[in-house]
Image (cartoon, rainbow, N blue to C red):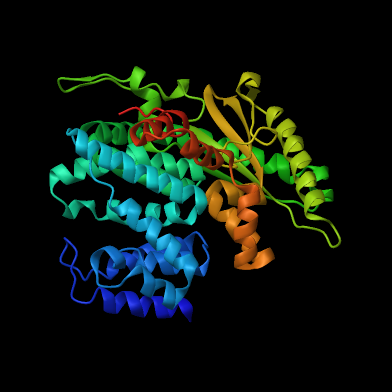
Length: 408
């Protein structure tokens, strides 16, 4: 009911407004809200998605938003409004300082409530999906900003599906020739990779299906296959590809350990009377058990140097999984092993943390627990806020230390 009321308010606030495409503007906030609902975010975040442009583009005020929907929705909308005011990169010192200050405010607001940046990421993702309605120079500047700021933020938050699509779409606009070349070559070589992947998948499913330990623990195993997305593949292959004056040189996919991958998800039900900690611990040792089975997979050769233990040493965004590689028919295949709980974090990132905590403790309790489980890099932002007074230096530090260097 509350979300429906938010839709009605957004509809009347944006009444008569049109997007660049000529469509009613309300289509955009509805699409943003649908993306947030797809992440299973809480009602306040979905409502904020519906209202995220109202304060900036309509007569609705932040005070009215708070009176209608409460302080939580106001906080998200206010933070989102600050992000939306982010000016584009400019050469003048004044504009650069203004941009740095707005970015500073965005990062600070985000560190206090991560839902602010998730709403912005959903906003940016839908805008990227409709970028073809913008003039070419806007397509380039928005795509570059997406790769520099928002795709890395999606990665840091662990929202893989957002990160992947943001990168792929920006890549297509920024480097259309490289994108199309790579797409053609993947299509040409892909059939061989897929055959190798399918064969390995069948063997792995058969091996895991016959394992007595997994049967005893009543574990349901789901094995899926994937090929690496175009943008990260391009980044990794840049040193192997030459595109000069229309000359195309074929790429060597066999040299990549993760061009193709298998994902093993252990569907592990929590037993009656089993504590959450015991359930997760049981899942962890079963992951290591499966790792041993993978490394002894028939007709395959393990690559010991390629084992990465993100369960004992999670990534900063909370991602946990075991990664290993096998050689099969000369083709390197990455294998990822995780539990169903780890998989939810891998797919939804911080949103999965929120979902779990809200289901168990309610919305207010979830917000309190967020402070307890807040990821380290968000705490770092708050610490730098006190230590670094110059906004430009503050933003440069975040880009360098937290978002990492990007290849463009």
